[in-house]
Length: 289
Image (cartoon, rainbow, N blue to C red; front, side, top):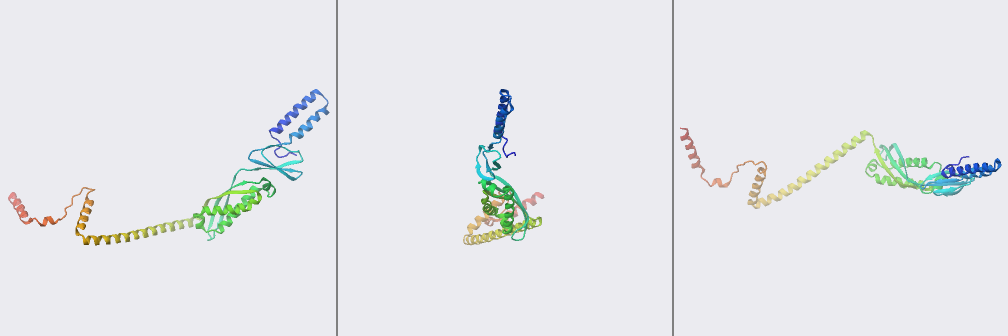
C-alpha cells in the first residue's frame, strides 16, 4: 500500500541511509539475517515522513478514524496505520460558472457568465463533510445563479450588478459555510441577451435620449422667451438702450469678416442733400460734353 505523499525528500534520504547501512552491515557481517535488522526498520521508516507545504493542510486518519489536521512542515506517521487521504489547498481559488438561456422575472432569456472566489477555512469539514468539494461548490454556484436570475428583472441585472453579486455571495456562502468553505466574492462577468432584443433596447434608448434633448431645447426656448420679454420692456422704456444694442449687434456682425455696412443715420437727414446731388449731376454732364 502506497500512501499519499509517502515519497518525498525525507523518504528518499531515509531510504538512502538504510541502503548504506545495509551495505556496511553486509561488509561487517556477511550473514543476511543481520542485514534484515537494518532493512526492515529503514523501509518502515521511509514510509513515515509526510511533507506538507505552507499553503496546505493534511488530514490524518488512524485506522479509518479522524486523528488530526496536519500543519505545514514534516510530520511522522505510523505506516499502514495512519493514512493521509487528502491534502487541502488553503489558498483563495476561483471557479467560473455560467447559466445559459435562463429566463428572468420578465421572461427574457439571458446567458450569464460569472466567477466565484472562495477559500477553504476548515480542512476537516471540507474533507469529511462533502465528497469532492470543488465540484460541489461549482454546482451550488450554478444553481444559485439560475435561482437569482429567475427572481430578477433584466434591467436590474444590467444596471445593478453589484447588488446581484452581493446576493449571490450571501446565498452561496450560507450553503458552503457548513463545509468549511468561505465565499470571498462573486462577480458577474457578462450578461448576454438575444440580438433582436438588444437592437430594440438600443433603439428605445436612442429615442429616450432624443426625447430628453427635445424637452431640454423646449425648456431653453421658454427661458429665452421670458428673458426677451423682460428685455423688450426695458428697451420700450429706454430707446437709447435699444439704439446702443442695435449698434452693438451691427458691430458684432461685421467685425470678424471685416465687411462694410452702410447704415442710415438721423445725421443724414440734417444735411441738404438735394443741391449737392444736383451739382454732382451737372458736373458729370459738362465732362461728357
